[in-house]
Length: 515
Image (cartoon, rainbow, N blue to C red; front, top):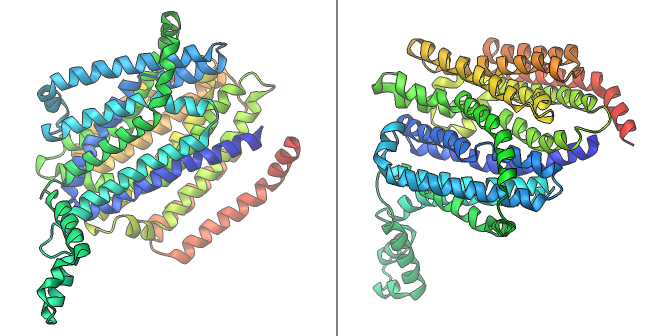
């Protein structure tokens, strides 16, 4: 059981980590090209993306997993889910296209970018169920290839638009330089008549002609639109499932299950991205975009924890449902959570030990480094979020998803209150503290409610011990001994050795039980 879980988690980890790492490469590109204020503007738009993506999926992905795994007629589940998402997406795009000025005013997204945003959100919504179907069918390799191809195409187009076009539009490109150098050496001017050089120069001139100055943000969203459209085309064959028809009774049951998930998703998204939107609105206008850009760039350095938590969640979510009726599933859930905390603690400590190297690699523009002190807070918040997802198994397998909505709403309230009070006083530090407070409280609430609804004997002593040790050592490395790599390596190495020693017998026992 555990072998299968970790193998599946590894594949889904590759499927998640590789695309996001490719996407992470956009951070140095954007922070090199865009000023802090420009990156702040892009961040606000992507934050609205996250919120609308939840609304457009309205919990149907989780409902799909729940009903697909238990239904005797899986084709009907696929068809009903596809019809539902396709119809709602069509309605959204139609209404949004008719209300562009109002939507622009509501979101503070400029009209020149809003059309791209609507297209991207619509296309992304249409692939929610096809991707979920790949996961439910246990086809992680295809899932990984498609996800990686999407991000790879997006990355390539960003480089083309933001680096290639300005270069080719420069006064003297590489072909011009070759021609001018030859002429300077006394070569015949007929050199320029070489067909290969002429064709190369023509291509360069054509590409350079596509360049528009001060169009960088639009290029970013054009690249995203093309990548999203390509992914939809690759997955459009899944829509053959529409022919099995729409089941109204099934749809109503799925919607009842999905609605609390959607509410929880909205609340969760508020926790995840609304701090960026509020920073743009609550800080003084003269500095808001710039401060947001710094915060958003350094926030992304916690991606290592987010990647791990996301990969783990994608591996265990199908596992939770498929093993809910097995013998003593609570034991498996407890072990999984313990090792999640161990691996997460290692990542937390590792990032803080090597933070100077990481920030230099991914944010080369030092004007962004001012916000680097939020990284430990965001890392710990992301770890608590991962713990919460592990603890949330009880309400998912018992069909009590409304508790997930209540917990996420509570977290959202904390996020909003702390941000509204704190941002005008301490700026983006309040946003980071709000994120930690929200995710920490959600993990605690899920644990205490779960003890009554679906008791799981978690090894709290070990979990708290590993977590506390990692936070202590990470804080010492980051705040007390910054830049002391030798000492930081000793902290990290010592933590790894002690953890390995303590867990060796347990891992050996688990392995023997599996065999």
